[in-house]
Image 1 (tube, rainbow, N blue to C red):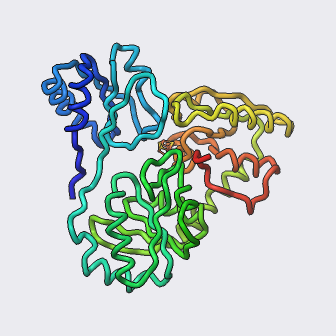
Image 2 (spheres, protein in one colour; image 1 turned 135 degrees about the vertical axis):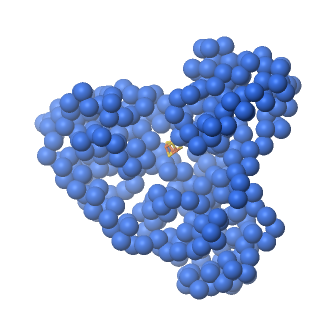
Length: 336
Ligand code: SF4
């Protein structure tokens, strides 16, 4: 199964606007194609293309301002769906999607649904690249006698049923209550996020293998145990850094300032830390006891490699300070 990137509309837009300099931004996985894309766009549109080589993990992190300062009149952003409303220069999105073929939800998948999924009302979610499977899967579930629901768009997700690592709130936008969730995509972070967000069982459908499995409860338990260990460690720290990101779609300055005040009020020391990319290289020499991350929630939950200090979320620091109950743990989210 191949990720489809269609540049036809982007080429038309660049030609129509007669841009002479265009910026190009891609996620890490697509960087090997950067030179080929830049060459093709440059030749087809008779324009100069500047490749942005900084790490990019989502459309929350547009390089519009940086590329504008280098003379770009528009930004070609590849691999993510739109997230931000205001940008310094026009942004042309080229989304990456796995193509769905007719009857992609075949007999093998229907049999797996019948065998594995016992619940009747199922909410369907997918990451951006797999949203093309949602309607076919809905029809498949309904063929097996189940009720399938796809939640609406959110402020951060322009496609029905789409989830991000920082936004599962499409699950609040379904037309009725559901008993379980079926996630379509790769990896375990999103299914884990969905089960913590909703407290419902989550099944995972992997389109490449057509495999359906129930997310193991021990995975959630292990994750929570690790988080509670970090909260406990944070509760014993004295000097905190509250990291705030300058990336437009991750910046939560007011929340960061509120947390600094809360930490200070509890008799401890706290500083606001300005970062663009949060990494051990940037933070280690600051020699703080604990970090509170208000940027992308995945940074907190995936951890910061080589940083031997606790990194906690806004809700977790509140628990560590005794301002929130342990039972009120929640996954950090930028959906509000
Ligand atoms: S904040 Fe993190 S999870 Fe949300 S879109 Fe950006 S990179 Fe993805």
